[in-house]
Amino acid sequence: MEELYYRYNPWWEDEYKFSVYKERPVVFSALKKDLESKSIVFLTGLRRVGKTTLMKRLIQYLLSQKVSPRHIFYMSMDDYTLSSKSILSLIEEYRTLQKLSYQESVYVFLDEITYQKGFERQLKNIYDQQLVKIVASSSSATLLRNRASFLTGRHITREIQPLNFSEYLTFKDIVLKKSDSHLLHTYFEDYLQTGGMPEYVLEKNVEYLRQLVDDILYKDIAAHYNITNTQLLKDFFLLLMERAGKIVSINKLAHILEISPDTAKRYLQMFTDTYLIYLVPRYGKTSSLVRAPKKLYAADLGIRTFFTGFRDKGSLFENYVFLKLKQKNLRYVYEEGIELDFMTEDKELIEIKYGTELTEKQKKLFNSFPAIKKTIISSVEEVEKYK
Image (cartoon, rainbow, N blue to C red; front, top):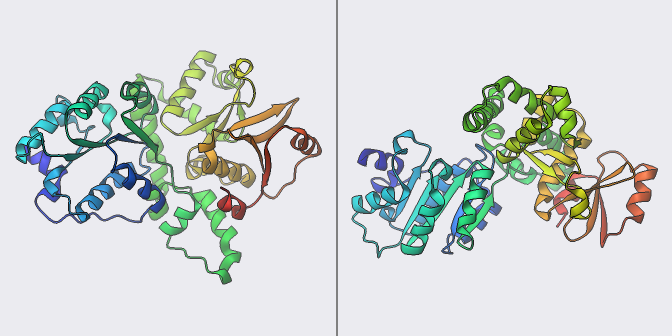
């Protein structure tokens, strides 16, 4: 075990040179502030979205701030050799190995924490009794949400999303001068096609996204939920990508795939829980909307276009705006067969139009619908300036 500990923590022996491809300054700035609190920090999000990279970058930052290498501990909990080890025993063995008393504070980074059974009780115990700052990651929304409720008041959750357009330009080393502003839309449409998975943006390996989705389908969903019909799982995924940006009916999904509505509902939740898709509820009184169908968006535009082709730029643009504004607790508006894109939690009505205009019926509903503020977003410039 000692050898394993040192493999995961090379900074204990040598100067640590972690090769970060590119920085994500906005995300990283928030995480640096999180290090200053006692709270447990959970990083969630799509598989391979960069959670591990950000953890390693935080370790590099701590070392640059003269934190002793011995006081920083990292482990990946999906390592099968750790399956019989508790978090408590790992930290105890780490302290013993580095000759650290329980009066000395340490930083502990635990990747894929939900692979550890009962992690929530162990983390509570550590939080309450030890001088430990914990940063942990998970690619499963359900496992983290259900178990982290045990840690109410003791944790912060940060969802790491794929690169936005500004980050994409940074990763591609693209600096747009004022004299080159005419290229903005060309680069933006490249982004709509490529998406924001960091490694794919850098490498552009056409098999990367296919392998990523296969890993999510077979390792995160099929294996975890004991699903044997993996072809049905893949057909369901492709159907969801085709319907990204549209209102999704559970009954229609079930009918197309010849499965029961209950099975379709369960599968839909699985894809949501692995961050492949997001579902937006209808705006209105909660009591009347329990059964209302939700609107679906892809978590990454590159995954969507890889499996459906690069078409319907207006729908891709709407998907991008959703990802930019999702923290505003969005709802879609639907009245008498007319749909408007988003109502935010602070009652701003937003309609997305990329190269098109509102229909007369949409315009009438948009103008008459009660809202504190009304906005039409029709270009990348408007999205990037939106607050």
